[in-house]
Length: 293
Length: 243
Ligand code: HEM
Ligand code: SF4
Ligand code: SF4
Ligand code: FES
Image 1 (tube, rainbow over the protein chains, first blue to last red):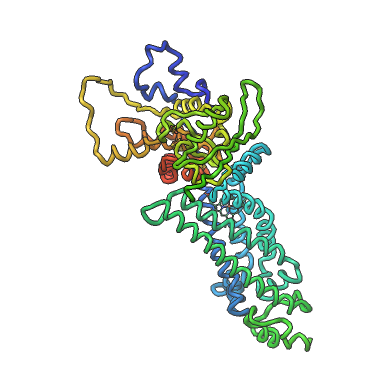
Image 2 (image 1 turned 60 degrees about the horizontal axis):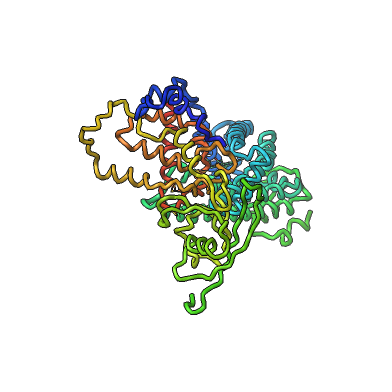
């Protein structure tokens, strides 16, 4: 038992003198030794939420950039070059992308490090929680469990992805990315990453709202139900968008497999570029360009 | 539900007696359901007619004393406020976890609650000399109402048993204690500042340990606003931490 009386500072102060002398209301001086508690737990708690929020917002923006392939290859090419500063600098500078990735990686590592504090620290703790969760059959407790496992998966999945982008920032473009997805066999990882990140991110945002009480409306319980719907909608929307985008890269990658490694040049290769424009809309089998190669 | 053929209920009870060295084991008891039957009534029937050695705690039978908390089909709740008709024909009953087990369904919540009260110093801290003859200072009705709302806690321990964080980390303070801090923080007679409260709950065994699982909020039989109170304290304590 951890809550034994002798652990309490108040009691030891009280025990130090005869019982009759215990004042009715202990004063500050008696109750609090001058020792000041560290402010770090407060800062770390805030950082945990802030880093999670940053990553979740990044995830949303990232998904919209990536899904520009659904508009056209040209559109995705434009987005990729934009982040290399191609539209304000003389030439595209991929190291800018590396810097952005480095920043995200730093926040990611910070967030994961902070989250580690919440992981079960021993098998005993793990088992206690697992049993508790099974017995309680409680939605939010189950969501945390999901967040724990998806977070754990993200360590590896997002880590690999971020490292790739960090060291090869110039290899982002319609053909480059599609080749990575298909010829580079990254699609299984991206598929898992998509589910893990969207599920983790949406639960994280939901929990943020509860944790800091940013609930819409006056009735917290009704707001929580609404928030949960919103969370599910968020997951489903971004998983859907992600799946369609990944499919588009996959198809483009299959179509481009024989010329894997070739860089995309806007308007350069007339046949493949135009026949495959629109990405998801075109079945690889119907691409006339392939037979001619 | 048909009224002419009462249901036959099976109460599957986790029995044990640490004092006599009897290890935990399940035992089934059969009772006939009656109109408006609560678990309190069913348990008394078992003790009166089937097994006088069955241990469980009751005082008020009305959700006021907080003695009868137990795991009902795995969820913490008050036996006296639980109608059998809200459950299936097989109801499992187990003692609340976390607390020291006395025997069968009876646990010692009192020592734990007292330990929490001492750890968090849940009493009015005032430097003013108490004048027992003076008229009490008036309090705005809304404020008195708000304090009373949080003071409705009956220390039943359901929130403690419902908290996954506390199950993992026994030193975690738990919602019942945080709610009490919120209550004294409201009270104008308590002269403690947020810095003082930070000394009590400003760490990972305190408010920052809470992972917002809301098991506490969802099982509290008194419907206390634990989610908003914990979130509020978290904001106040972060504000202290950033100063
Ligand atoms: C190594 C990868 C990651 C791990 C291990 C991880 C783990 C965790 C864990 C265990 C929590 C719960 C913390 C708590 O209960 O207080 C959490 C919260 C959160 N995570 Fe992650 N996470 C990772 C990556 C991400 C990513 C990529 C995002 C962006 C979508 C994200 C967004 C969030 C958010 C918004 C929260 C809520 C913050 C809070 O509760 O204060 N996390 N994370
Ligand atoms: S807060 Fe609710 S669940 Fe917890 S001890 Fe008080 S009344 Fe019981
Ligand atoms: S909200 Fe906090 S106190 Fe309540 S059950 Fe969850 S972790 Fe425990
Ligand atoms: S007997 Fe008092 S709360 Fe159930």
